[in-house]
Amino acid sequence: MMFVTLYLSSSLLLALHALAAAASGAVDIAVYWGQNASEGTLGETCGTGLYTYVNLAFLSTFGASRAPLLNLAGHCDAASGACASLAADVASCQSAGIKVLLSIGGGATGGYNLSSPADAQAVAAYIWDSFLGGSAATPRPLGDAVLDGVDFDIEAPSPHYDDLARSLTSLFTNGDAAGRKKKYVLAAAPQCPFPDASLGTALGTGLFDRVWVQFYNNPPCQYASGGDVGGLRSAWEQWTASLPSATVFLGLPASPDAAGGGFVDAETLVSEVLPVVESAANFGGVMLWSRSYDKDSGFSVKLHGILQNRDDQAKVMALEMVRAKRNIGIGADTTSTYFAQWLYEHLDQFCDSISDIQHGFCSLSLAQHAADGASPQMTGAHGRSAIGSQFGGAVLDATVQGEATTTASRKSIM
Ligand SMILES: *[C@@H]1O[C@H](CO)[C@@H](O)[C@H](O)[C@H]1NC(C)=O
Ligand SMILES: *[C@@H]1O[C@H](CO)[C@@H](O)[C@H](O)[C@H]1NC(C)=O
Image (cartoon, rainbow, N blue to C red; front, side, top):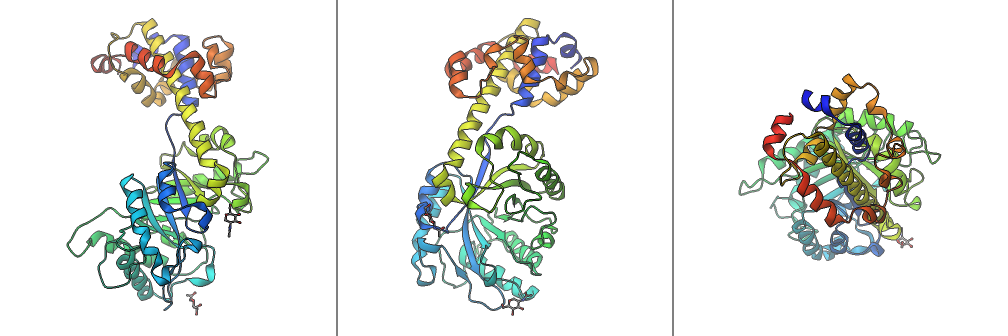
């Protein structure tokens, strides 16, 4: 580390900072599907390639001796067995690596609750046998599909959801009749005021893997349309700190019509909100309500596009660092992209140690970077075309390829 900190050129310092501002990588999107037939089939939804998780909305009737009912609105009538044909769609989603979960609850809050721990256990057994790895004789509403887990979208306070989480987890752990174990996901969709009135106790079990917090319909903690992220930030910090064993998603409406408030357009999400939420170690991605609104608004298409551009921008930064590295003569240039990757992965260490010798570096802005003339082509380069006009993708890759360092010199840098 000392070797590098002593010899870093100002251009590399600036590039390091700019890279910090341009975090790289795609963001996973979870979506709810099932409440509007015009959103297209489940198979089409997965076929868009936009989503990593699809929550089937909803098992809207269960508990307190009710006959459980899957409600997929106009898609199919589960009561008559007509949803069994969805098994093929579920299989196509799963073969594309997309996890399909059964979401229980939803906005029709009169249709569900749990009356006792035994009731919770019975509901868990029903879900296990009807949608997951169980094989007791019950009608399987989705035919032979074995879903990937269960999402709690509980919007009416009631006790015993912690019991339900424990019962499901124990069924997951025991596996199916043949002892086969699959990694099932336990997810939940609390509202953003912390703690959640309906799910707080269940989440307190620590059993949930994915928690998509609804940052909408709740003015105190949702993004404020004037641009204030303060309420969102403080709720986000509480949520992420309270769920160390889960990954936490930022739940958003996919269009202004999808909720009573909390919509953030995709550009603002990337420039103002993601920098706030991505700094949490357990940030998992974005959840959208719902496929229907997303299909109409094109929100996630736009989001993926902007993130791709951001990724390109980070690559340009990496290239600049590689060039700076060549100028300061660390190691021998060879044939891998290791140096750029390594710098990117260790950026925090660089910032820390550089701060020791050159105080204030980490607060330099990208605008200043451009103004210094270190890299004028970065000015306003927020689009693929702007970057592309300076560095065609292939040229960029080839250049990074040619200028980066070996594993051996990587070790010597460290
Ligand atoms: C379903 O989606 C269509 C098309 O976006 C919309 O016009 C309609 O209002 C939606 N229906 C419901 C019940 O939300
Ligand atoms: C659950 O719902 C049933 C039927 O609506 C009601 O009688 C019961 O009081 C509810 N129990 C709880 C614990 O909310």
